[in-house]
Image 1 (cartoon, helix red, strand yellow):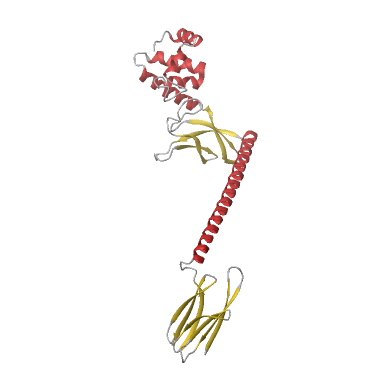
Image 2 (cartoon, one colour):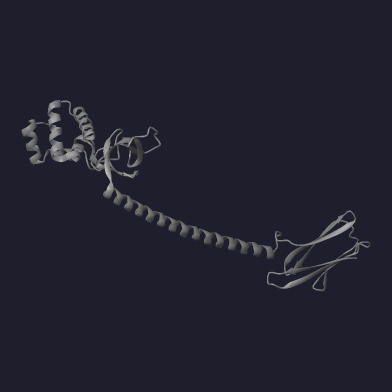
Length: 298
């Protein structure tokens, strides 16, 4: 007679004692739980399995015969569609959602903390760089590079210190629709002063308010070509004189008005056809231009 026993611990902590008695010769099988018979079968000589309920929990008892010997197992069936398993799965799903919500909240908090720390560190770094640039910074000319790849929107600039080249990305797009503070677009080969830390030139900052003389000459050629194209009935000498007076009185900001003479206000709210015409109506400027360049009718 083969006899085995198992102890099943229910969800509420209560212990249930399961016993099995199997006659190897007769094949008679008896299963009892807490001293109460719950299953009887006869002539069990081959593999077999039985299901019993303990406190609404489905349990499986299996008999397996190998080389003339019997092996017995007792397992809890958590997959069968029973009220107990449905309730358990609902509770597990609830716990899973709570865990996901907790982890999501934790990730959000950590992300905000990292972002705040990174932003604070970035501001501190910027302050440190600004301090270093102000204290020990030196200036040198830097040239603008516009990438050939259409997918890259932002340009960069480079400069050379002690035979070594340093490059940084700009804060302006290489698209001609995005203008510098002086009102002019950024183009390949434009040149401005950059301030760098001598001990570490990779710490640098370009100043678009400080074009080099080379760049001023580029602006002059660029704007004059646009003036000649937009005003073919006016002599180049008059337009050149007109440009020189505007630059003398208004600087590059005034020159930008000439560059966008034919542009609509919807495309450029700062410099356009209307602002160009208002510029021409400034009495002092109008008088100076007429005295120096003669009467020019646009």
